[in-house]
Each structure stands twice: as structure tokens, then as C-alpha cells.
Image (cartoon, rainbow, N blue to C red; front, side):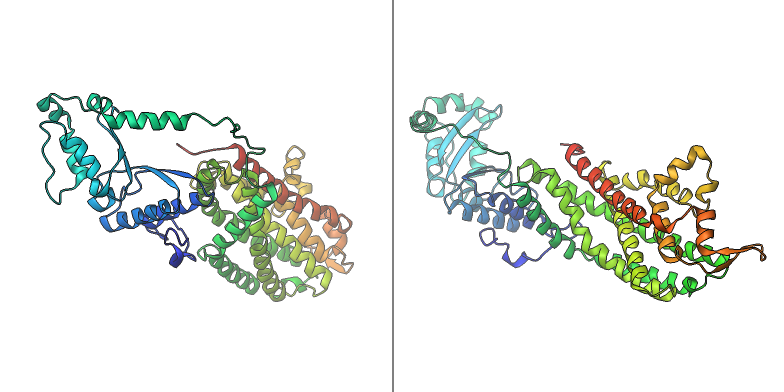
Length: 472
């Protein structure tokens, strides 16, 4: 950070080009810094000053010079450099149109070696005082100048003493010593899986913490939704005397699950799309493999969704006047937590299997409709045609509603008045007869809800590993 003069920006978010975050010049310095982490002996750069104004280009090249002063070699192409930038280089590899070499050697102080080499050619005009040697060398070696002088600059270089010296150096450096051994690596990556995972987790933790547009807004939305649903469904949880009371309580749970769940799934998609785009370059550079990257993105969501579940659960549970026992409240938090997790992982998964976050919501939307239709609220499981009943069991929302309703009302033996106003039964019997919900099945329901989280997270990780939508 100090070498590339980025210490003042150590706490900044990189952001999106042209939208927010670092400027173009700062991004170039950051890209250089990222490559220096591996402590390379040589760095290749392709036009590091392109797209920059004179001041920004000077800052970048000062950074490059700082790196060279540490003993590293930098090879870079340069486009229309100023005098100061051009003379910051030690050596020049100069080719004319067609790729033929016409100069390769040291520049010298104030480009004196380069200027002397070309001025020694008969007919080449002398450089004026204060003129840019980079611009001058392009002018005097143009195709038109070759025709005027009748000189092939490539042939002139091949016959020069400089060419002989350069060739001798190349041949000497190309012969390995007798004691040298072939370079081999025991593993593809420098660090084991756990070290890669912890590094990616540390990075994503900082990225999330510095991205309030995603995290803070999500919490704010959760507070608003919980207050809205809590006041709309005021004391629904304490009313258990009639069939409609049970339907009202289930409807409140059903609406909240879909509202917050789909919001989570939609809001995470652009975040994952950006992180995946960044990972293409970093994975290509061999920094880490796909699975540690993917699983760290999964892990970093855990604390944020836990806070989200606590916010929603505490507010809605109290306003809805559900039964305040430790077991029932913890069951409620458990199902809300894992429900928000699988919705978030589903959004991540749809992003991973599609090219970008524009297409991901289009792919995800039909499944929200199917989950809504087959969750067991609008059409109870026992009334779904047999040939469609399998999708009820494959629907994560149906398991969530099963768990939420059963954990709150599945152990109540109190009388329940049916919709006809005459018949009565118990709450336990009604849940089993109408919905097919049994309280003794609650453990299996909890396992299924957690299983959907694992399923979506694993598919997300495999998609990150095997699907590459990069266009270059």
C-alpha cells in the first residue's frame, strides 16, 4: 500500500468504474498493488497510462518507478508518453510497423543513447532542444522517412554493435547453469484450502461491512416490514378460538416469509454478480480456487441474516402476541433464520448459473410463483391433485409454513370452532386433518428447511466453479 501510495485509501471501497469508489488512476495503482502481493521478480504491464490525463499518468508512472527501485523488473508498453514519463525508463525495445526490431538497449540519461544511435544514421534530422525524444524517434523512423533516406532501420539495427551486444547478453542468460533444476510446484495454489477460505472470508467481510447500500438498507427494510406486518396482524397469534383465527395466523407468517425472502433473494444478486466478475481475474492469476471463494460468500451471509432474523422475529412475534415460551420463540427464530438463508442462497445460485444479475431475476421469478402456489396456504396439501403433490414436498416454502405453524399451534389441545359455526374440534386435530401437519414431525421439518440451505449453497459453489460467463 505504501509502495503504490494507496495508504490514504486503505479503508475505501473499490466500487464500480464510472459509478462510485476509486478513480481510474487509483484503480490502476490498485491493480499493480494486487499483483505485487505475490512478490514477483518481473511484472508485465500493457499501457498503464492509457485513458489517463497527464497528472494521473505521472502518478501511475511514479508508482511504477518506485517498484523498479525495489529491485523488480517491469516490462510495459507505453503510448505517447511525455518527456518525464519516457525518461523514467531504463531500457527501450522499439519496433517499427510490421513488428521488426529497430532498437533494443539502454536509453541513457535524457535519452542520450537512443538519440545518438539514430542521429548517427546519415540524413536523420537532429532532435531540437526540449523536444520529446519519444515523439522524435517516431517521426525519424516512419515509413516515409525510410523511403526518403533509403534506409531500412531494422537492417541498420541488425548490423549495429548494439545488436551484437544485446544478442550476446540474451544467449548468455538463456543458458541455465549446470546446478539449476527444473521449476516445479507441488500444488496448483500457494495456500491450502482453509487458508484460501479464510483469506476470501476476510475480504468479503470487509466488502460487506463497507457496502451499506446492501447491508444497512436490508436491515432497514426488515424493520419496516416487521412493523408493518406486526401492526396489520395485531394479536393474531393469541387468537385460536376459530378456524379463521388459525388461517389468519398462517397468512401472516406466509406473507412475511415471501416478502422478506424474495427481497433477500433479489437484493443479493447484483452483489454476487460483481464479486464473481472480480473473481475471474483473481482466479486466473492463481490467487485462490473457486470453492473457497464461493463458500466464503455463503459464510459471510450468516451473521447478517441472523441479525435480520432477530430483528424481524422479535418485532413481529411480540406484536402478533404469539405464545411467549422459550421453545416456541426459538423454533420461530430457527425457521425464519433458515428460511431467509435459503432465499438468499437461492438468489446467489440463480446469479451463479446465469451470465449476469439482469437475467438472474428472470430465471428466479417463475419459481417464486410456483413456491407461492404449492406452499400449502392457498391450496392445502390434501387438496392438491396427486400428480402435483410431489412438488409440495419439493417446495422449500411449504416446509417453512409447516414448521412455523406446527411449532406455534401443533401442541394445542384447546377447542377450535370450525367455519360452519357449529362443529368444533381441537387445534391439533384441525392441523392434521386440514393441512396434514403433525407436531411429532417437527424435527424432520427442521432438517428439511436446513437441507434446502445446504442444497442451494452447494449448487451455487459448483456453478461458480464450473460455469464461466467471462467474454474474454
